[in-house]
Amino acid sequence: MSTHPRDALGREPGWIYRDLNVEPIINCAGVRTNHGGSNPCPEVLTAIAAAAEAFVDLDELAEGAGQRLAALTGAEWGMVTAGTAAALALATAACIAGNDPERMLRLPRTDGIPHRVVMPAGHRFDYDNAIQMTGAEIVTADTAAALLAALDNQAVMVAMLGRMDAASDLPLAEIAPLAQQRGVPILVDAAGLSPANPDPWLDRGADLVIYSGGKYLRAPQSTGLLLGKRRLCEAAWRNGPPHQAFGRPMKVGKEDIVGAVVALERWLTAASASAERAAWEPRLRRIARALSDVPGVTTKIQPASAAVTAPRLRVSWDESVTPVRSATLRKRLLDGRPRILIHDFWATKTSILLDPFNLTDAEVDIVASALAAALTSFEDPPPPSDETDIDVSGQWTATVDFLHGSAEHLLDLRQDGPRLTGSHRAGQSRGDIEGRLSGKTATFVARHAKPPMTVFYSFTGRFDDGSLTGRIRLGAASGEHLGPVFMEQFGEARWRAGRR
Image (tube, rainbow, N blue to C red; front, side, top):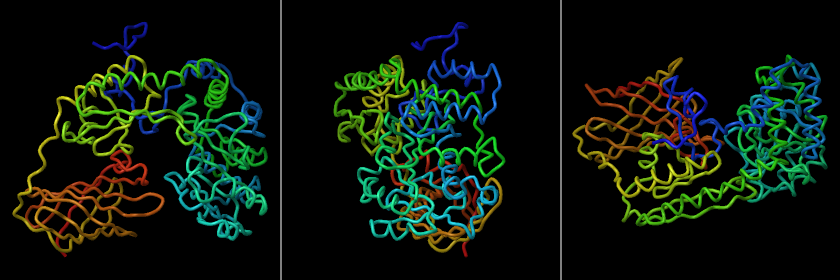
């Protein structure tokens, strides 16, 4: 029987999704955008409703919000954006074009004007396409000398990933004096980290910093914050909505602006936010206690840090005692009722990671019970058969039909019993193949290494009358985000192939 609280009409949380034939999930995966980020807190919902009761000039609202964000964080000014990727794009546009109308209206055509963004080696990340969409060119530097050389008259910005700073060969403390010497502003992406007053990044020499509103702050999910030097933040605002410039599609409404400001104020000052943070670790300890009697299972709380806002629980098991792979376990939990979502890209073959941020007290017990049951009563299904009487070795020409458009790809397959290796050539890249044959079905993944994200083509095809036909799951992921969510994030395509 469910222990979820019901509303005045007797409905459980998630009823609105079930009305659309979508079953909601219990979220143990933290604040991933793919699954809704976080739910707005009551103070934010009240602020949104109040903002919807009247109209306002958005430039005047931006000024009022900017001053409030400055007072809360110690920044000179700030703005609310349509998420952190939008903040990346608008900050870059500000550094390229300022509020020069001729340059603003040219973006993303940047020929003839400075447009280089310098990043320390190792700081390229999944979302830096938002920087490049402005027409910026990203270059990397692995030493202070290389960084200084790149900060010439074509450089408009240095961009850094905040959670990589502590482990970087070029930390902010070393970059700041070099960039200041050349007059190049520094942007820190701290999307999943926690704001403070004074802001830790601005206090150490950054000119701009970005935070997510729809993650730990519990602001509207589609909001972000850009904080820092007033002139740069204001230029970013002018390059974005409601103005008819590069960022016009990145609309943020009056309700979102007010909601994000209230969320930040709550996070930094309210007792309710402190109480919420204090509940994270006890929830993890409850799950750990529930699993303490499961044979072969161990648990360990990984504390919050400068790079991780919330603590997490690592659940590991001895494969000789509990013969289950984490991928199978996660799938079973997600396919069950209630549906339980576990991190995929922080899992290993025999461990998973639980994030408490989006769990309620009632859901903690549900998760603990479901995990204990799965780890004591579930075994992996038998592996697919190695038997096959076909040979797909050789070169194949494949026609790939995407959701819109098609392309010709080349496959060079090598078969050793059921094992498949080889290469895959797409339009502009080449990838290595790993997979297997089972009966007449070929399943293989082509991995195309392209920084900052590797592109994945996950093929499934059936051999019939000399041809291979089937589907491809499409996606891209960085090294830290490897898992089905991102490796299959671009949907499916159909393919058919014949020997060359």
